[in-house]
Image 1 (cartoon, rainbow, N blue to C red):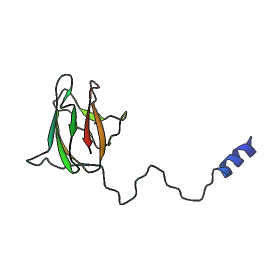
Image 2: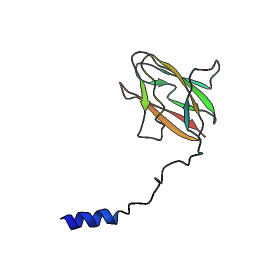
Image 3: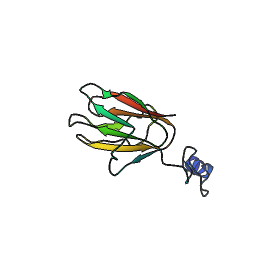
Image 4: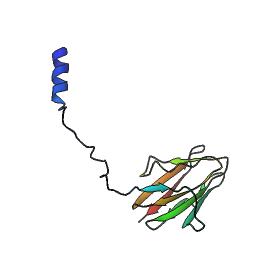
Amino acid sequence: MRRAVLLFVLGCGGGSESSTPDAAPPDAPVPVITLSSCPNVVDATVQDSPTMFIPKETTLGRGGIAKFVITSEHFVIPNTLVNTDLALNVARGETKCFKFMVSGTYGFLCGVHGFTGTITIP
């Protein structure tokens, strides 16, 4: 048993650095930036209702800013079933703005009820 384990450990390589294939290069832009405050003018506003986000789907240009206005009945978390960014978190009763820097579809959902929304950057 020990020999098999020792051979397995030796067979794993060890000693050399490797990078994760999905890791972004160090100079890659951050996909979604959480802004410290919301500017006076934004490209889109996403609000919650009792059963859905309004609008449910939004398209912004690269560098576009989305403002989330969430009531105390809901909160926003990333929807990991679609492409997303872990920055998409908005607490109950919070207003928060995000700047989208990389093309893609960013999914989010209500952490209480599970209804979903997306922001697409062409």
